[in-house]
Amino acid sequence: MTARAAGPDGPLSTLLDDLRWRGLIHATSAGLPERLATDAAIAAYNGFDPTAASLHVGHLVPAFGLMRLQRRGVRPVALVGGATGMVGDPSGRSSERVLLDREVVDANAAAIRRQLERFLDFSPGPTQAEMANNLDWLGPVGLLDFLRDVGKHFTIPYMLAKDSVQLRLAGGLSFTEFSYMLLQSADFLHLYRERGVELQAGGADQWGNITAGMELIRRVEGRAEGHEPAHGLSYPLLLTPSGAKFGKSEGGESVWLDPAMTSPYRFYQYWIDADDRDVPVYLRWFTLMGRDEVEALEAERDARPEARAAQRALARDITERVHGARAADEVERVSRILFGGDPVQADAATLEAVAREIPTAAWPEAEPRTVTDVAIAAGAAASRGEARRLVEQGGLSLNGRTVESAAAPVGAEALLAGRFLLIRRGRRDYRMLVRGRRTP
Image (tube, rainbow, N blue to C red; front, side, top):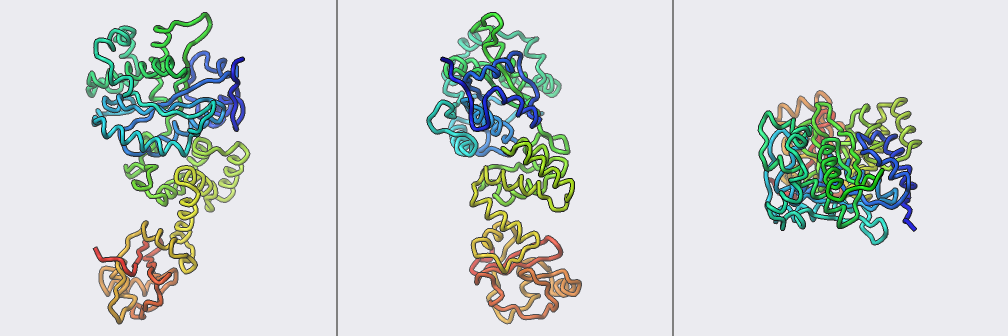
């Protein structure tokens, strides 16, 4: 008897309905709806680029995609492109990527596996998530064997017609990158044969590569009348307001999932700062919230946009998913302090977390010590005259309290938790003096 696919979010047959409501369907191959409607168990894969030591927020689309599949009873395979990462994928790019060596690819793949464990369940069972690295099977293949077994099934006109190739022809496309489509097609064929993977998922910019893989399987394996041996599913690309591929901040700096590369606070703040127009999409794409919860947050956004309740719910949910509940709790406390909360009520751990996110300097031990002295030491004022003007204009506060005299003494008793003095210039320019911290 054929195993039936179902998970905590319901049977496989309802997957496309959920993805459609979330706006997550760019294209599906012919026969996929009928295949999923059978509720028969299926395996699916999505590729991840190992050219960095961390995934970034642009990878959340495929990561959540595999998670949604698993939660409907699909066995997910996360494919790290160890071989293709050493070649380069032209899809969605205007220039050729830097090529990597095996040692770097292996280290990056291990880091990606640890991050995907936040999304996928790798514990034993019928839907156990798997990791794979295409360097394991593409690496040993010789050029002549590859051309004979894969290359002969594709014509040059077929490959030139793909959007990913057309977009790069004018600026120059190396043969190395031109061959990427064949390599990804070989991946699909290998996973189909060796791991029973029938479905490949990916972003809209991967649709040409996905369909090429389906074509290779169709040609090599053949098909029964009325039966498609392999299937494809692509998600729409989410773009920034500037039209760039999602995953880059407006300043051009990637927002990484690795806390050493993007702190949990800055990750959280990325979502807090989301535009009201984007939040409904982000809630659907990057959380497991159901329709009722999402629509309630949308209604609250419309009624009280200044409260940013939808952004806060989104930021909490995705930060907890990526960094864990403890980190999410901490960044919420830091955010409250830096956006109007009372630092006097904060504990030492929270104040230390604040210190990691704003400019800090060493507490000046020499006495007597005045408001002017600490303002200059923290970098909130460049001179005694500037410090005096700031105070006169009501633009300087210590530990959340506006100061009234630049000459007022500031003793060690002002230090919160015995170590920290929080200084604010204007509305949002925070600095901190920390006792025991060395001056750079």
